[in-house]
Image (cartoon, rainbow, N blue to C red; front, side, top):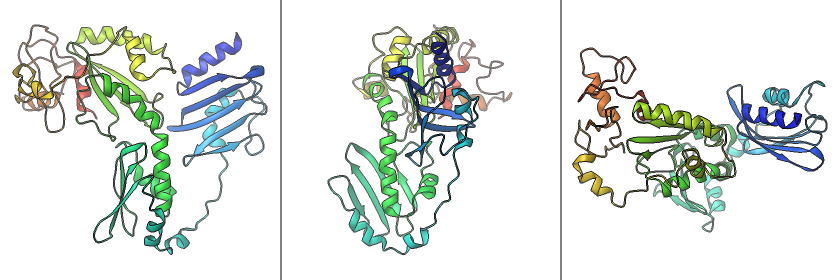
Length: 376
């Protein structure tokens, strides 16, 4: 019973960790923890749970796991599992970093390109002046690409989510074209759970934003019911479930009620199910509104258009989702259009703050939840 309570407490404190019961009271943990403003991916085996005796800890460093035990890190004798997790960043021994960059720069970059030619795994493309190289058409990652400048290897373009600082990652961990390509392929594998998390939603929900959906997007906005929408964001693509945020957008009364439903449902999140099925269970639905068969019908339907700019979809992919708390009001507009309209008012009050928030048509209240549509 005591062990069960401990597991429950740790699960609440570290939602990114998954517990697996082994034989003879042993426990295996895997996943991510957020400590000192850093996400750390780990695998931890405790043969004498809840004691730390004879533990085996594997920490991901530069996309590879390094193993630690009591032989190469020191922990205090009275520490519990929570103490180990809280101090995990400080426990890693600092290893000297070898500097072989100068030798690698001496190698012929164009000879390396010939060695990397592998049409069975990906396509390699060079421009006419041989100043740019592009990798694309990866097996199982067809939509992804990586483009570099030659011979400097400066990053020009890539297909990973915008929130990933790929240039910094490559500069820190790669010193040759081969290093960069291998690291990029590892990143694609590490991001597979991130893309899988969105796959069912993209296929089975009427995703309104972003449009078109690309491999660089880490948010989805789709309808929950009439005039009510969900905005799903994954802040850290390498820790999908731990960094997931679900926001409800719509009229105030609906949002207040559904936030309680969401809060209660998140406590029963089933890690064996994908995000789409978990959200259906939380809101007690069989399916979310399905994708429209013809996007052009919405473009041509005046009732779907924004009441301010009289367009349906803007160049940035935004569609009119803002409505007011008065169900009889016809207000329907883009959040950005409404913000621009508010900004022209003499009072200059803050957009969609509680002190303001009045419908420009009927003067009923506007829900502050729509403000999240202005955030990427």
